[in-house]
Image (cartoon, rainbow over all chains, first blue to last red; front, side):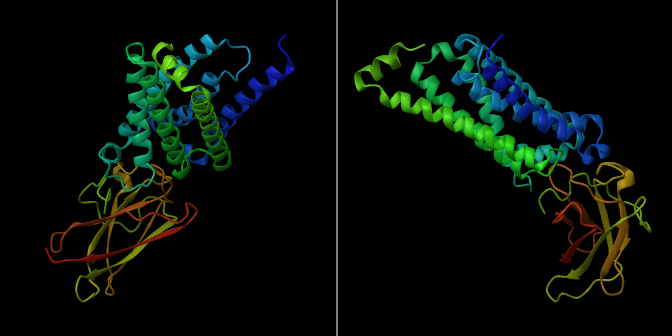
Length: 210
Length: 122
């Protein structure tokens, strides 16, 4: 039986992810939307929720998971994120092709689109980078991924917060805040770890790591 | 206006009301330069409402401006779509240059939306 503290962490994580999804499922807007539109919207919401898991996994804060296992799940969720985005954008395109074409060509009238599109390309770039991971020098992989992750998190959060849609507002802002906080903490910790190493060791690490 | 012509379906019929009503789209049509109100101008209107998508034929309707260049058309309640509660209007009758408007509502709870046209001769 795992310690009760460990269980609470997982329960809290589940709640933080499930509550916004449930509240969105209760949105009055859904009654005026068809199944494709609803699915497209929820693919986006799910993507946002998954984004909370990513920094938590890679930081090793989730109890009961070995670092190795956590990294594997992190990669798997990365793949899921790509899928979620494809479903989100693809589904919306089916609902209203001209609106999505505008977004992809950076000429949409809505203020949140450019944030979403930028986050989207950053996710795709991260996926490509991760496929090339073993061929890259550790420092390039790490810094590249963290830079892209920053773009992804900021883009996604601003995109979500500016949208008036199925997500209930308080739970949306709460989830977005947690996503931002988790990402900032993980990136900051990694940066600190990097800076704390003596210069010679830092260089050796960069050559030998991974 | 950006995105204004999205889901435009030309030749929407002039109607007394689009669908079941409950929401008012209003505005004015004036001539560029001197601001003279333009009467009898055909304004087409569509939006994502409680009764259908922008792309549904039934969501489209048209009305004419009165002697003061004012138009009012009742339509179903507009609901947020693609992240914003908004409507679409078009002047596309040839005498003046075509204009598409895409006004955004201040609140999804509003029961009306205004948009104003300033038309240049074609």
